[in-house]
Image 1: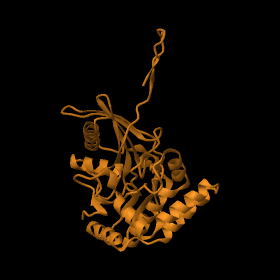
Image 2: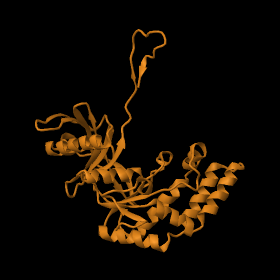
Image 3: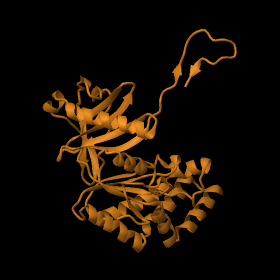
Amino acid sequence: MNSKTVVRLQGDVDPEQVGVKNARVAELANEGVRVPEGFAVTASAYQAFIEADRLGPVIAREIRRFRAGRDLVVVAAAIRTAFLAASLPRVVSREILRAYDELGGNGTEVAVRCSPVAPQDEEQDELFLHLNTGDDVLAACRRCFASLFSAVAVGNRELTGPDHLAAVMPVTVQRMVRSDLGASGTAQAESTFVRIRAGWGLGDPPAGDADQYSVRPGARPMIVKHRGAKRTKTVYADPRGTRTVPTNPAEQAGLVLTDDELQELARWSVIADRHFKRPMELEWAKDGCSGELFAVEVRRRTLPAVTIHGPVRAGASAQVT
């Protein structure tokens, strides 16, 4: 599968080509953590798209108009319209479709999302769920490319860089994890315990409504469980959207995760912290069809500032971060 434009999410990958999120997921897979099978459409593919359809002059022209006083929203919309009207280069389309065929081809459900390289582009994290044709995958990739020129993204780059023509947007294509039929949540290590939040359906459940677990992994594990109310869950809604529905009495009364599943998630969380050498947060999902757990994203966890109240010597600071 690996080529200049498409890279499998395993082994050694280049974050500058596949994006930070994809690189982290690939590194976890190399450490034995279960992640959804998939591939990245690279920064080189994005650049080939820009060059083949001569979108660089369009971007430059619209940015000049913005700097001359035209409304940012109008300028960004004009660039995105040009992106969506363009076609992917034949070599890029062929490689994407070949990679999709290796996942199963038409009829195989996949999720497509942005995988930004630059931190200022992470707000534009487009996500397209349960796509099941090659044409859908190609269209979603083009929309992810276009998301690099949302009004927010353009404004951020005007303030902090990089140059708009140097910006790139890799794309992730992965098998769907049917967490709409299963569960999802987060896991993060804190001191000797791993804190796990879990709810039914898609996405990170609200802290006040979710099951909360504290797991001490190892040869003599300890698990503390708190059952949440779990009053609602997010499921798929046609066409390719989501909706929130009430949970049933059995879902509200039961616990989302078994002891074995909790220990597996705790082990993954410890692996992530050790591998990346800093506190990380795992986003996980449970496939309701296969019953398997998957790590779908790993991100840096920001530790809160700690304020120490008490007598302060002259010239000393009372806040520790």
